[in-house]
Amino acid sequence: MKTVILIGALGKMGQAALSGLGNHKVITAGRSGDVDHIVDITDVNSIEALYKKVGHFDAVVNTVGFCEYAPFAEMTEEQWRTTVMSKMMGQINLVRIGQKYIADAGSFTLISGILNVKPIPYAIADATASGAIDTFVKCVAYEMPRNTRINVINPTVLAEAWDVYGEMMPGFEPVPGKLVGKAFERSVDGFITGEVIFVDA
Ligand SMILES: NC(=O)c1ccc[n+]([C@@H]2O[C@H](COP(=O)([O-])OP(=O)(O)OC[C@H]3O[C@@H](n4cnc5c(N)ncnc54)[C@H](OP(=O)(O)O)[C@@H]3O)[C@@H](O)[C@H]2O)c1
Image (tube, rainbow, N blue to C red; front, side):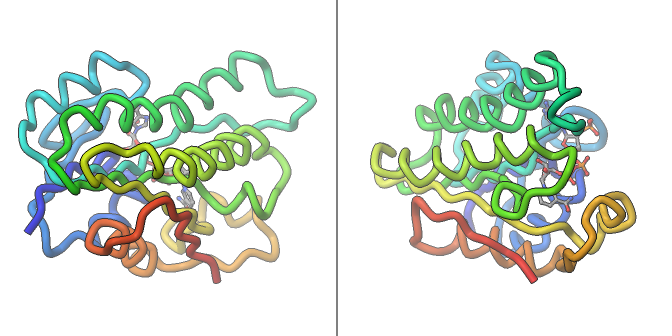
């Protein structure tokens, strides 16, 4: 049994990840609500405080990455900045700071999303941040200390989120959260590193 910090636990992707972490002691974290620890991934002090409060942990699973949606011509710099500071820098900072605290041979699992390989209108900021995270994971895996691993889950839309995103995504087939949970399980329980784990229908 590993001690796993699950960030964004109350979100749709967080619940999908949780379904794959049944063998572990899961410590939940998020920005609000009924979680073990409150954390804001856009705030480096908040990230550092989370790791210090938890103490020993073997894995970090992050499912948070806020994105703004708009046509490229209308997307403001502020909207770009908000997306980059959450989905890109928020996740990079979770690893940059977390590498000092995580147990030997621990693992980080991040979130991206299929829109960087299957683009749709309005999603340029999400797609760009997801592509950056996929690249970050593939390349930083060579530099991770003390046999720690890092992977990213790149899922298509969840069946549980189809009512929200379905209209924006004609021609896409949603996947059940339980299947995406298996991808998180493979990252946390396996030995792979530097991988983008796609879950698509
Ligand atoms: N849903 C899908 O089908 C799908 C598919 C592929 C990829 N993704 C990606 O998965 C990620 C999560 O999506 P989701 O559908 O799970 O969203 P969601 O249901 O809205 O959940 C997001 C969770 O993240 C928390 N959060 C937001 N900003 C935070 C911050 N700065 N620090 C800490 N927690 C924060 C939210 O807390 P509050 O409620 O307090 O704001 C909420 O609990 C996104 O990057 C999305 O692009 C989603």
